[in-house]
Image: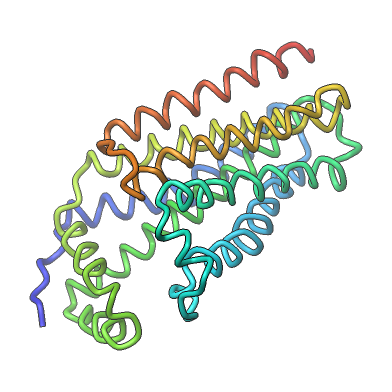
Length: 278
């Protein structure tokens, strides 16, 4: 059994800070925004529900069955083998799922439960809810999990997790070892980079919510909905192409792309649509 390096107090403090930021800050932002703009907090909650329903409950299981069947305990099938043999197509499908499902989720929300809320602030409220709950799940809960791993490493009980993974999913054992090594050497820059990445992601989601909001508000602008799908697919597509080995980008290059793209979509939608709807 491999010996795992202890997670130091500095690394543990960074992990706790990450969990607090990921779970509490989105709630604070939502409260400040709704109070300042006198918005209904239910709009934020509907944005959060949109992500939970369309991204986690609908998108991920279908995507995993088609692209990653082994992660669902299923055998490889013709579609997954076909996609695996064609990296570009694999990356496109991987990116298209969140683009279609999440933007369609926004469309459904604005067309149904939010159809009577026509004030422009509704678009940002929904985006804050959608992006905020994603931060809580992908950032906050990840740090909670990492804290649990760190405690287990320091108390010598991490071997239980290793044994379970070795039995149930031996192909993932190397990833578990990597996580343990990363926790022991987790730097301040790692937390800062993760925070910046989530900020740009939330800005993107807010911008996308603005696009789809105006696609629903004005029939002449319905083209903004497919545009949001294309932009979402493009944003996730670069990372997917990098994962597939079709392109090779450094972590810094990927972060710069995410930052530029997220800022561009947000300010494009904000200045081109939101500000003009005063």
